[in-house]
Length: 284
Image (tube, rainbow, N blue to C red):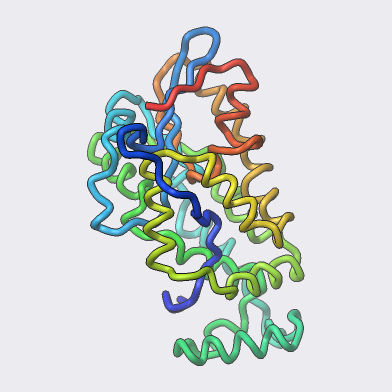
């Protein structure tokens, strides 16, 4: 397990001044209604929060209480055996190491960095590039994130929890990268992003008031050097999710679909794509 001192890819970099409090919607939740009058709720998540960020804006509990099921990016019903088998594929067999698959300068940088944060080379040198990236990115989620809170409520209320993606589909977002693509993403992970505490505060403020268009604009800037990853992480998945979301709409039951807030805004965001399909989208 890599140290939490390891930096992570920050996909949503916030840099816009807050709206006046009187005009700022509380929460990142929308109601989507199709032409037949069927509706569901679509919420934007922060995958990592602090205890001081609670309680959540009340729109999250309102949407949850009015829904028959919770839908996340990834389904949670995966066996330990399946997950272990998949992640074993992220490590090299005996006789091969990460050193053989990275630019020597990249490997040397990683060796010096992990030494500084007291992670022995033996713990990461057998990882394939995508697995090392996955370890780093996984640090962006904690058990105070919106999904964890809502899953806890769903279990307490015996409410079904579904997924827009299977475990494998979700994992292959990163595992499907080439060695060079993963290496570039790893390197960009270490580019300073400014004051971390200030960034987190600004990010949370954007999310809390539901300013997904600002999030989308800043995400485009953040992904400038990773266009292949931006398309893979956001655009392609959004397009894949639209038929599934519309399928939930067609059932005539309320669902609460919760995805990363970065998926909602912009011309390729879920809100724009749902509007383009003739659905009415209203922020709560």
